[in-house]
Image 1 (spheres, rainbow, N blue to C red):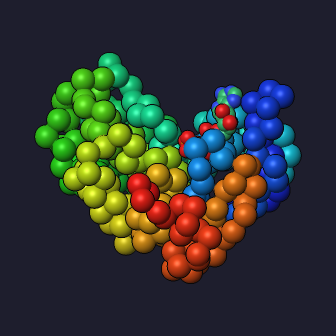
Image 2 (tube, rainbow, N blue to C red):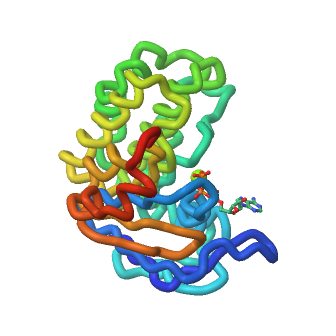
Length: 240
Ligand SMILES: Nc1ncnc2c1ncn2[C@@H]1O[C@H](COP(=O)(O)OP(=O)(O)OP(=O)(O)O)[C@@H](O)[C@H]1O
Ligand SMILES: [Mg+2]
């Protein structure tokens, strides 16, 4: 369970998040919806320790993680699949996935069955399986996006942050990504999802929050938000 209370964060003098509160209960998929520049990526960066919050509290399974280093947060089971395909270009697909399990291999997270999970990740992402010995930097953009997602799952995380996993993908691959998210959900993986396809995100999610200019304006059950006239007009119209 991930809990955020009155979180404030930004970049230097630029304040982006003005006190946001949200919860991602264990086993649930929660989506964060908002226009470009609303602060969705900033929220995820603050949670995973890529930037330091300036106020508020973030707890993972009851333990405060705000202010910790990214690596310490990852060790506690928080995986972040960041916006924009961050993979290790000069390493193979398999090595990228293995690195995702790094805290398990060094004993800072329960080891479990790393080899078995690698096989399961490959089964979940057949495109990666076919290309397992290819250097990640030579994958197509969409394939790199999938690798970033698969690598996050290799942590065997308590919570996964998925920032625009479908960004830049062809429609058929977008569908595949949402199927994979649904599949992970059915396995009980807890996720915080940011997606440009807000309607599809609300279909797979249990609960949603709308972020407007760094503040949560509306939140509720995903099924309710899908039918909320204001949410529909602003985020679920043509092009979303
Ligand atoms: N490194 C940075 N330095 C300064 N300002 C930044 C930085 N990164 C983001 N911002 C600003 O913070 C605000 C929120 O950006 P953020 O990336 O969180 O938005 P977002 O909701 O993820 O948008 P999008 O849907 O376009 O990905 C924007 O005004 C952006 O210009
Ligand atoms: Mg973003």
